[in-house]
Length: 188
Image (cartoon, rainbow, N blue to C red; front, side):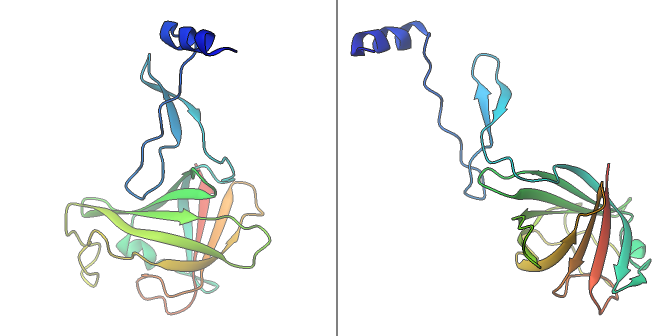
């Protein structure tokens, strides 16, 4: 096409140049292109390789191979909300809740590597505490935004349809579990 035709198409609206993606607080980019006429999300433009997109509820905590019901003394519900990351892998919102007392939300990034024995969770730390400084149990310290900003190695078993079984290989903040913390999540 000639320069004149391209200029005419741009001026008349027949051809639109996409707006650049916005940068998020973690230095990534917004994963959706917005239709400027209707201001609605239209297309996911990043990688779409997170096999676990959706909401997951933790149904069975274990310490090593033993049932670990002490988990429920501190937390009524534990959920994962997984979405595609713009570049690759999964963005995860990990939420712990004690009804009427405390809700803590962490942001994670998981790069799925099906051939690897262990995977890495890049925790961006606690992003919200509701109410601010709340505690789950008397023995727990207060919830602090920015805490737990570290990496953790996990093994993930996703061989059973609708079930994710996480085994945390490093010490993770778990009340009274000195062994490997294992959390079984079911798709909601």
